[in-house]
Image (cartoon, rainbow, N blue to C red; front, side):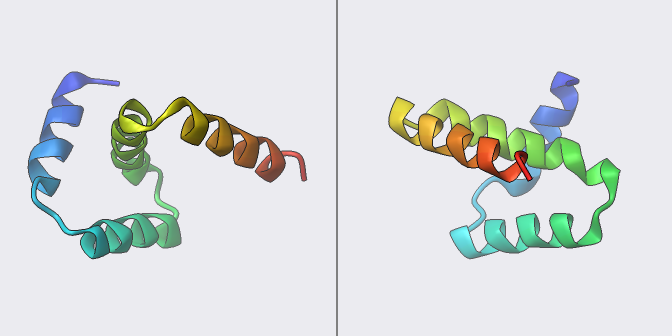
Amino acid sequence: MNFQIRDAITTNVHGQSAAEFKDIVEDAISRGEEHLLPGLGVFFEKWWQQSSPTEQDEFVQKLEKAFAH
């Protein structure tokens, strides 16, 4: 992923509240537009970097279940 995209997304959402982040994620998912995926990827990357190994393990277990069906 292009670092300029990461920087732009980070700058655009700096200082957002938890409710605003939730709205952004839900809106991006509901639209289903592929051009919004890099933004969600940046969110995921930030979350992953700040999560404990336990949280990361729980997340990948949920992914495994979600993609098993």
